[in-house]
Amino acid sequence: MTTPSSTPSPKVSFWSVFGPQLRLYRWQILLAMVMVGISGTAQGLQNIYPKWLFTYVLEPKELTTEQRLINLLMLIGSFLLVTMIMRMAMWHLGYRIFTRVRERIVLHLRAQFFSKVNHLCLRFHGEHPSGELFSYLFGSPLGNMVNFVQHCSMFIPASIMTLVMTLGMFLLWDWQVALVLIVGSLACVWMMDVSRRKQHVIWKDFQQVEGNVSGHVADLLRGSKAVKLYSMERTVADEFNQQATTIGKKSYERDVKAHFEWMKQEGLGYLTFSALMAICTYSYLTGRIDLGTVTACLTSYAGLTWPLQTLFQAMTMYASAAASAERLGTVLITASTTPDPVGPELPVPAQGTLALTGVAFAYGTETILQDITVSIPYGQKVAVVGPSGGGKSTLIQLLLRLYDPATGTVTLDGTDLRHLRGAELRRRFGVVPQDPFIFRTSIRENLKVARPDADDAALRRACEQANAWEFISQMPAGLDTPVGEGGSTLSGGQRQRLAIARVLLAEPPFLIFDEATSALDTLSERLIQEAIERNLGNRTAIFIAHRLATVKNVDRILVVQQGRIIQDGSYADLAATPGLFKQLVEGQQLL
Image (tube, rainbow, N blue to C red; front, side, top):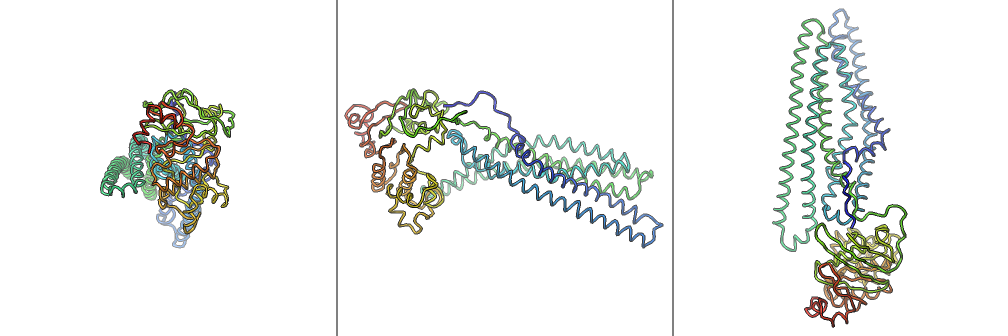
């Protein structure tokens, strides 16, 4: 078994996750930001128009009515030009560009995350419920990061330009007024940074709870059949209410704390406006500024509120985006415990002997297999039997390289499986589990999972070999019949025969049947047993079995108990030899 490295994991940050995507589309994003910056400049200019209205239209007493009207029309014309072209058109074009880029980034990150999760080992999937992983793809983590980038691209450039324009005009009008605004703005920025750090902790805590609740609720929904069978509707409803209450309390706590941070920022803004009114009054009374400038100062400050709030909102959004990036990035840097070989890949042998030599394996601190040494020549039919929890399924998972052993080697035709790509190796195996997974699509598509290029003749032949064509041909749409979520419209025997047909379609050299008939009725078991025996051919076949009918006709039986192979021989030899196998037969635990 490959153990995690003892070296510290790379630090995960928002920029380590999102940065490569931003660099990929940097020129489009830059163009969008320039356009939005022009829009912000226009907003700054809009704040000056009240002063110009007083200076060029309302206050001059020497102007005639006609001159006053001309000045007003020129002022209105230039205002509309600034508003329509610089403000609205530039902002909309920038938004269109960035929205296209945003969707490409989201698509790439989802594909990257899904591909990573899809290639991680079973150990990872055992530690992370599917509901949690689904929330990463379509829930708040990715959404928080995208929203932050969109906010920064679409609003921050405009906010900065508006701030620069407004503060610059204030410096031209009166340095004391500008000083009040600069001090107030710096205080706001400082408070934003303090709030950002607090918000990061708040959002990280919330998203941890959200992921746990999402996974729990997804489990409740997936278990709908068991809920019906055991009349658990009330219990499950109570459990859901408990989970909903948990997320509700956490949402309340998050929003109240975030709102308090916002109120502190808003309160500082009110103090700054009060100081601005005082200094404007003083400057007007002392003759340093006129009434138009006073009006422009007050309206400009109102115009400054939006950019400052936008900057504060960006700080808040960064906190949630950084917490999301930590969650998403932790998965993206997770190393598989069954990594593909580095360097030149060895070809996967088409056939050969399967061998385990000195193999031991553990889940965490729990030892599952120890000192396993066994060789299975190609073409041999082998049954693996023993008490539940003895390590039978783990033995098969090692052969499929779903796990690597802690010690020892697993080989195919003399090649250590660690030197082979896991996906390529598993294409040599056809596996029929006890409860096969059937996708929510047609029978045709479920079969073509094993061989996408198979034509209808090949599909029918595989179904006939698996004794599945009889029920498929009677369905309204035949191969194109949808089978519902998890194959819910099929019986257990039908799902099992469909799984066998899927395996036979791929024509693999190795077959594994993991208790394939243990949960079926007698008729279904007979049909499946016939299909299996008829199609084994010269392939290697391994059966994890509890049924006497399954183990009677194999070449060899391995008896596994407490992680060790304690007996190895034919049915006749083991049934006549004192030991666990004879006890299982006589005690009818092999039925």
